[in-house]
Image (cartoon, rainbow, N blue to C red; front, side, top):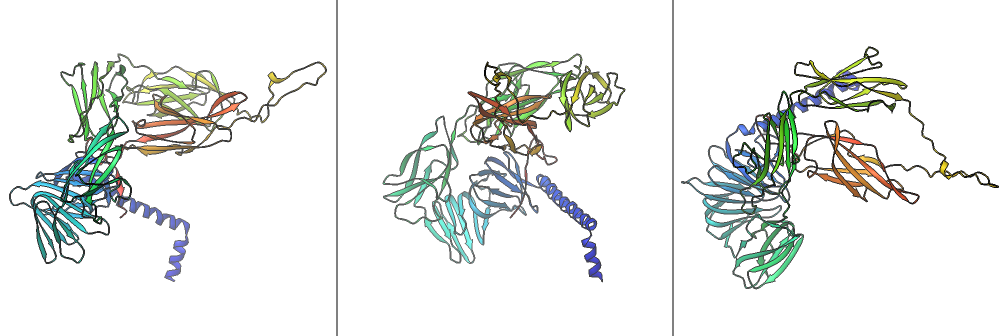
Length: 640
């Protein structure tokens, strides 16, 4: 009887909806709890800082399942787990001066408990460089193997389904595995296979140059790279690859001298040297280097010579500049003199954009510098830009923009009304009525935006509208002019139309009327979906696509940024393909964007363009954890 009652209860739609809603709330609460745990991880004991990182590196705090993106200068707490993705790496400087380099596809747990320096090395490749103080040791654990050192340079490698190798370049280390214990001298290597005692041997090949994670810059598409190493073999083989598994080998040469020169294109590379007669194993030293194209470092915004106005509250000025791969951070400098002999404001910024409030009238000069601890990355400085901040003695009333005064518009489910804004206003009040006195069917809408969407506007009616700009007390400070517009019924499209210019009336002939060819249909937008909302990322990229029409001969792509209700063109490109990717070179600021495509077609002997419908999307700031300033973090769910 109980089972029947339970079944009937579960079969009831309202009961099931209630259970599902409770389940959603429960798991949402658990997820928020995990976010809060990760956010408060910075409250744990800090054991070091990220000094350098390349591409995707993530961190997970103790007892959480949430991964967060690692940024430059990010503090690292005890019991943090670090994970690197393909073609990424990071360097962590611990409080005692130990430098920990974590290569791509690696996982390390910083198990610093009870004041002991322990690393739990799961897989991948790591390097440690330390000058021990006193008897304090760094202990590295990996699947039953214990490696301990006080002073030295170690490299540990462990790939999937392969043995662990430990190479000592300087100092001395000890290794324990089960009941076996060995000492690892300088320039020696230990190979630790499953169910076998450690094998210790002298390092027979030592890589010299390029140094690990070296970055080379070139103004061309390629650069000559010189390789050097020490070896006891008469002949050795150098291999250069795009991946750490050396599946995609770019170059392979057998040489009788320990040096090699190769011209390589821009990209990421791995290299190793082995005996020409040996079989490749996981015990070889592998180094990584980068060849990057040297780009011009420029500021993008504000435009040189711009004017900004404030009245009751400061004016917000946004700064944006080119992103430089591999650098630690940027320094935004602002001065009232062009020589920068004195700097009024200076900010260290982790991303390539920043915003500042200004409330003092002056002409300001600005420039941006790159900051990096890597000697391979020389300092770059943008040109000097300037802008003027002025105080308004009076507030300009809102200026109505859309629809234009006195025009007729077609009936639509929603009608967009917009106006230019002013930073002095807190809110706006839109009033619309069917007479100029605003007494007939008057509607009042309060909004913080500088636009409003109205529905249920009747056809064949004339509407009058105006906008009040309100202060912090919600009282009207100014009022715009009154505009009017008329709503008309939608006209029915004609499938066939006569072209009077083609009609002729000739003597002895019938009147001839030529019909126009079927109208051209512009492209239909597909991706991204309309009204998409996406978080701003450091390396954001949005894919745009549209449906190709039969008569399409090419396209013009337009991307606009909504600013003071006017649409500012930020990107335009002609293309033959019905798709396009736009990255953070143009998506530099949060806010609302519009995009459309013009289809190119031929009519008679002429080439014409026709626009598609518009779509919009919004970029919002990243989700910021509490109590962490000037740091943008992205959260991931641990799916392992």
